[in-house]
Amino acid sequence: MNTSDNKRTFIAVLFLLIAAGLVWTAVKWGRSSSGNGGLFQSPISSEKAASQDLYPSLNGTKVEKNLAEARPLAVVVENHPDARPQSGLSKADVVYETLAEGGITRFLAVYQTQKAENIGPIRSARTYFAEIANELGAVFAHVGGNSDALENLKTNYYPKLLNVDEFFNGNYFHRIKSRSAPHNVYSSTEKLEAYTSNLNIPAKKGYAEWQFADSLAGVQAAEKISIDFSQAEYKVDYEYDTQKKAYKRLLAGRPHLDAEGQAEIYAKNVIVQSVKTQPVKSDTPFSINMDLTGGGQAFVFSDGKMVSGSWKKAGGDRTRYYDGQGKEIELLRGATWVELVPVEKMGELKWSASGSQN
Image (cartoon, helix red, strand yellow):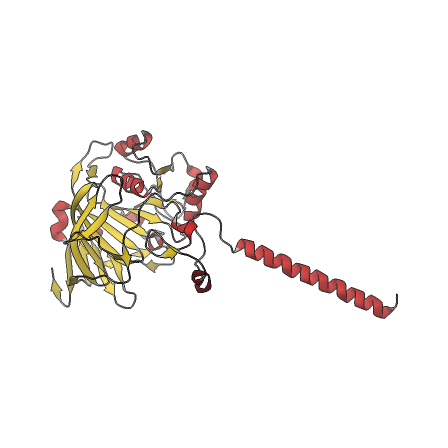
């Protein structure tokens, strides 16, 4: 074989090696970018969205079927001033805010469509948080709880939820060094999704969707909302942003920020749900319970407007919201904050537009 033949052979072999490398890289990239096969996936491209069927998720946005049918993650997040700014609230699909004890408020943040690398600080369970998680058939993440809540969880009083208590499942939580106990327990969507994967629990949709639309047919303009739960440091305000078409959340008179990237927190929908509360025997002083079945007064704020009506929950159905004619209120697609306000504090609810206040 002469020198020319050797050169041609070398070039041919080199070309084959390069081609094989490109093929291997493409296969590897395709596997890594095809989603993790679990609860969360990358955003859907417009080309992909146009070529397949999409389904409504927990917050009404359209996603792939496996994501829409995935089990939500419901995480108890504290709101003591020492816990602020919290992590992960801006990524939640739905957040419930309630009183806990002594006028302190607390959150139940529910995730399905977005990843959150840090969620917390995570605190203890309450019966009403477990009841909401059960309503959604969610993974319920918390750090211990009041004695009444723990007793109910122990006796399977909430059969639809998956209970993940940090006291017994520490691998799915982590503690950060920048905060002192008890304000230092965190988790992530990846870790909580791994809980179901490691137990080989299949994804299971345990809730029925709310009704969603592209706009809200409100009866009153409502660009500012004010909710006074107790003390000034727990006062909540929302201001409508016409550019984002969403409400910016304020806490204690300041923009409520997510510690992850210092992102401001916005809500497409704000629902104020009047609830009856009562003292309950527990190992935590001043513990309360609240009636989340039956019905009561409700106000839905969306698209800079307000609809007054009622909420109802019957049997195993999800809590739903109705206007004065008994029609279920349609929400905008996106993050929703549900404010569970005691009946006696509903008189403190204010909303305004164009300088007028109600």
